[in-house]
Length: 252
Image (cartoon, rainbow, N blue to C red; front, side, top):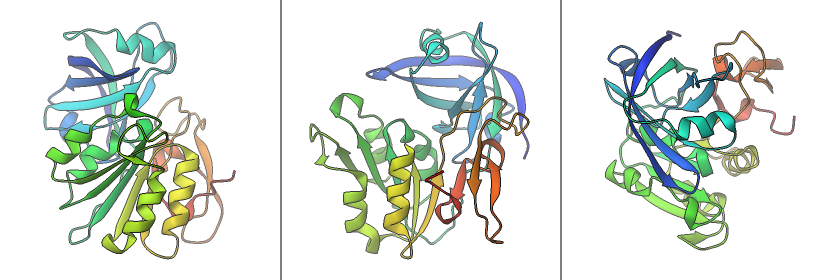
């Protein structure tokens, strides 16, 4: 895996939903290396540990991040201004595996939706199923449509789209798809994996606390069972964040 740390110029910082911000940063060297499903470790002023944020979209010169304010670090990030310099370690991790000739379904929950945008852009006629608690947290629907995706929105309270969960829609559409790629809260990933088991291939992007982002600190270790059958404490930042769903012990 090739990665580096470089200064990036913040081109845009926009609030797009309640507590959710949309960044675009520029760097001619590292952006072109990004692959779908990878992430970056962002240095926050006055903070020792970087913040791991999934890559939402990428071009040869820019990276896009959509993040939710959850603590002091992301609060500082939300207040930064266009023109500021940000030090970023990127791109990191093993992302989604995309193969030609297959129809992909991207299933996202909450802030797990952004990393699916760049991935959806790598496929033809993707189905995108997104789930949010309510209409005030809905993001990126038009972006997915602009990428040529069929988009189905669900909300827990029925305030927008389909009243229900992403798995309700997924169960009805399994015959239409070949591969599912999912990102979101662990309970959602477990449910999606259960729907897909024995029917279609399922890749899941795990969310774990991270320190270094490169496999040195062991903070993000999780229990997995690779194809050789031997249980393994895997580092999400280095071996993931994307895994075959069959490899993950969701109850640990």
